[in-house]
Image 1 (cartoon, rainbow, N blue to C red):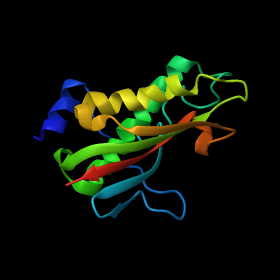
Image 2: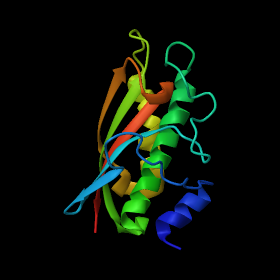
Image 3: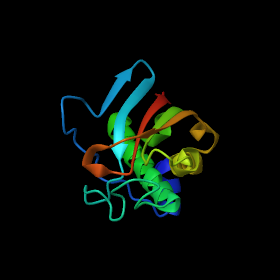
Image 4: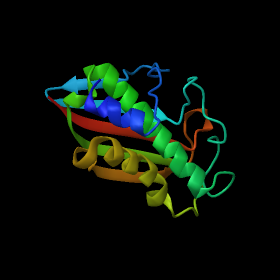
Length: 156
């Protein structure tokens, strides 16, 4: 078992089956030592939008639930990453995360919501999980998900 797999086990995290694309794109692209992963929604282990993660931050979704959703998106990123490289110990760095928060126009706490994904990367990958980041509020996301996160990783 890899060190990253052990860490996931310690955290009680089971990686889901990676979600298949629902349109004309691929789940990840590798170029050199970089893997770019398409945006991942807050899907549960069953591949469905997790309960309570549908709607807008600042309306039916609280910031705390938004953080949980961002964490779940990050778990789905790791599942795609594992599909791309086979062994998560090959990951040398989380380079960048991009967060999209489905929010009402007046919701300003976007960064704390995205911390759910950022914190998970550091928990799982240690210092290699520290990354650059962008977080934006959007009017809508696929399936009315409250959060979507994309990522870029450096691998061996």
